[in-house]
Length: 252
Image (tube, rainbow, N blue to C red; front, top):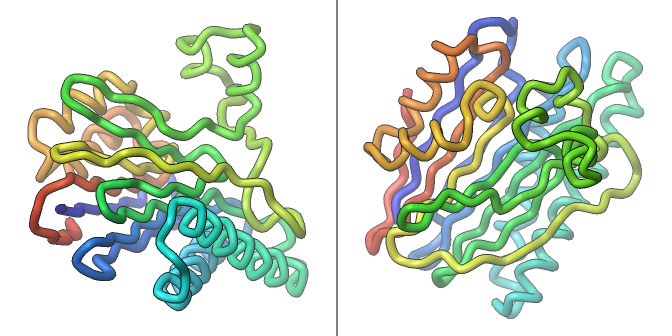
């Protein structure tokens, strides 16, 4: 297994409100977390880092205490997201300047050739297998609801003026209902985690082409292309390729 990651402020923002964490916890496991914060003042930056660090600490503290069945690992991710939600929610309530803050949160635990995923918001996780890119997560957004209702097409959603309006986020309410799922992660599969600063600038076809051309440099090339296309938001990408030997590379 190899893990690559990169974050970039983009071309239009004054600060980077994305945050990520990647780690090989042991020989059979990698933990990857990505968050895209929102809120005035420094709210988005605080929310994304607090959510990432809180969920990371919860998982690393409790992973060895559970049975490593699908159900137990999925429950662990849900508990970690609940823990992070309370941390962000309490922080926001304690400071008026942070009252509107919140964040997306993507958690991916790779364990024994499976990907255990927690998701809330409109950051995304894709799986690339052979010649197919498939979105694993469903955006918790107003535009995604319009697509599901048949009001607009997927192509129209890409250019919709309200495509960034979230229906769910972490830290905005006392409780959350994230999506928790498990997927096979086979040899040569690729998991791609990203904030909407990437997917608002590149189509899924463009993302696939860049990843397939050179997975080892894909994070850097994806960020570069997103910036070339406008870079209107912060951009964060984590790429996990299922190789035998585990390695982590952060691109500077």
